[in-house]
Length: 519
Image (cartoon, rainbow, N blue to C red; front, side):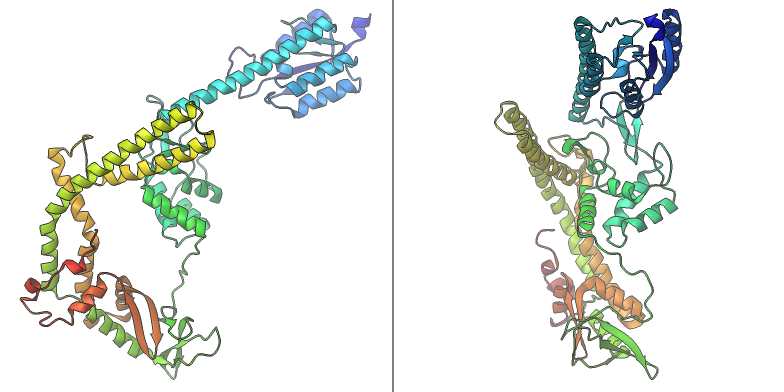
């Protein structure tokens, strides 16, 4: 009679993070438990169904069921196994306490015996402990496997944006549909001209979408991408960096530039067209304020904005500024014949530069070998207890970043067999050596263009060319002052030499001052 008056709650649970295929689905648990209750003659007053992990306390439906037991709505629980009820010590202790105070008088499981006696509660606590041990051990095994994959240079999870998972090799490969988009995202942000919101608008507009959901990316998605070192070859997992074997999508230099832009929170340049060519292009030499432009009686004049107070700098007619810019361009220009002579000198040095590149490459390989040995030594030190985990992670990160940077520098010299440059790729060294002279070669070509533009160019073109040669544009005493960059400043000195522009000038001048001493 007492058995017939007892009321039971039926509880079924299975979470998506449980990989054990032997655990019945919720539908199967309900079918089995209903048949079991009918066979045993148990009165089930309510069914509780939950799809949530029991590793941590805080399950809403489970707590609702326990509250009902405390209030006397039922006297026992019917479940498939004790591990369906809980996998953590707090929920397990709560159920055992309710058995102690008589709120729970029966727990029914098809394949597990329970009796509200000291022996029964002891066996129940063992079952709960085994459930918790299973979860803890499973988690440790999973994390051990993840760490081993990372040490092997393999990304252990779902491929980030721009990569795809290769199920055959268990690695990640560049996603040909998104590689160009991801690289462009870094390039846009590194320019400093676009905030994250604008980068998002541009890239979403051209069709960059997420991975699994294939939806539009949020600003936080772009921030995560821009801060993820996996795109230049290093994998970050729980704050520690690992060397990856996947193909980088960008260089470390581009990644570092993005971090620099993000750290200083640079503001985008104003994309609106200015009504005047020179507005905002100069600073006042007296007070440092911007020089603005205004129209008086049909003529344009440049003047100080005087935002910091009074300033005695006079107005300057726009035509006078245009004339001075043309004169400045002439002062840093090169005749085509002289530029050709300078380019010929560069071509003569390309071969010797390539030979020097072999020595530089060997130095880089030596550094890489040293850093690899240093990381191995760090591992021995932490295993021996000579350094802490934090010291190990910090020193390892420093070594990894330096090693990656040296590897990227080494890649610029062409393909190597690990010891010497391959003979059939010697021409790669020559090509890479010439690349180091490309900025100077570009300067010579621009210097020729400057001379031509000084004669026939429009004010906007002349201003843009002048910006390539100098910086810190000041206007004071009706005169433009420019800090010419290297090698424009050296070129300006050539104009003062006797015979500049003559046919034999190129053979007499020493071109080396125009070159960086360490290209």
